[in-house]
Amino acid sequence: MIARLGSRGDGIADTAAGAIYVPYALPGETAEVERWPGHADRRQLIKIDVASPDRIAPICPHFGICGGCALQHLVTARYRDWKRALVVAALARAGLDAPIDDLIDGHGEGRRRAVFHARVSARDVIEVGFAAHKAHHVVAIDRCPILAPGLAGAIEAAWAIAEALAATHKPLDIQVTATDAGLDVDVRGSRALSAADMTALARVAERGNLARLTRHGEIVAQRMLPTIRIGRAQLVLPPAAFLQATAAGEVNLARLVEANCGDANTVADLFCGVGPFALRLAERARVTAADNSADAITALERAAAGTRGLKPVPAQVRDLFRSPLVPAELKQFDAVVFDPPRQGAEAQARELAASIVPAVVAVSCNPTTFARDARILVDGGYRLLRVTPVDQFLYSAHVEVVACFKK
Image (cartoon, rainbow, N blue to C red; front, side):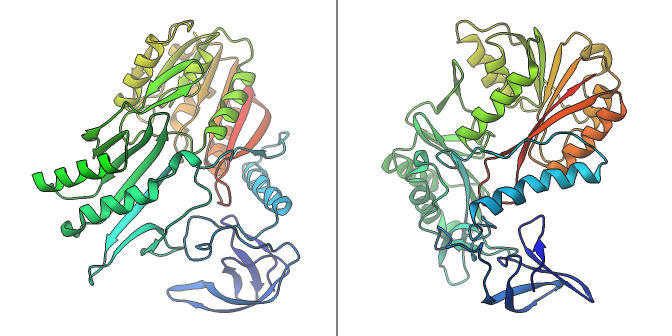
């Protein structure tokens, strides 16, 4: 019998030999399974013999084959409990105690960016879609119900690009982002392309009315500048730029960041990306922004300079993993916001812990590395006031957190 859900959404059965992980099984269920080749502690689900009352019909025909979603089959209330519990468990492992808010739904209209994988098989069959669950092959898809309406046409564009470059026999990663001007597409993985290949890609962009098509960041075709709105600012996206997965997720995270910064007059936004927090905070505070992406910093600076009513946003290109801001630099700020990649910001957290910054706001997409960094801050004299989980990666095991620390 399945006893509980694991941190990746797998059902877990406790046996004399140890825990056994069964993807797509739910607590209370009994199931027929078979061995997963190469994984002694994993099983493949064959069929459910006794179903949980919490089991519901998934919304996608590819669920269970495509590896993108883990829990479409779990009733909403239990799903939300499980996702919040991921944050509770991470904090408990780090020995941290703080109020944890209810999970905020940040899915909104759906994902506004996606990366499609394209492969050509030995039999010259093209497959475009997402990676299979715990496997390297691609599950070909013709629809994805968690994508935002702004990504309409994205799957068709990815198939067209794969067909145009099929003769290269190279695996492709096709990143598509919904912008106010249409789809922004970046193609990665191909070998050097011939003039004919580039012409074929340009035709795909024209037929698909793409705002922009780039290859490894270099423009192939551009019909319109791919722009997004961040607060009052209009920002031109760099090719393959990182954005929060959903527009609603970004708005919720930014709202929490602004609230936790309070009446701070000077704010540092570290790992700032293209400025989803900095450009909003600059409506009322002087913001210093830093990120290791030169393209992101340039886009942020141009957006800030072109927006009336913002306070100054001095920005710098800086590798905060190797060269974090130190206490002497940090002492000028009333608040510091940091939103690192999944690996967290251990080096920067240590410098913050040694600083006199009154307030620190942490944003993270990984509760485990967040808890590690939070432990560093608490050991350095900060108090963790509260943590808010935000779910913009619907049906997955990923969850965002926003937390407020006071010295």
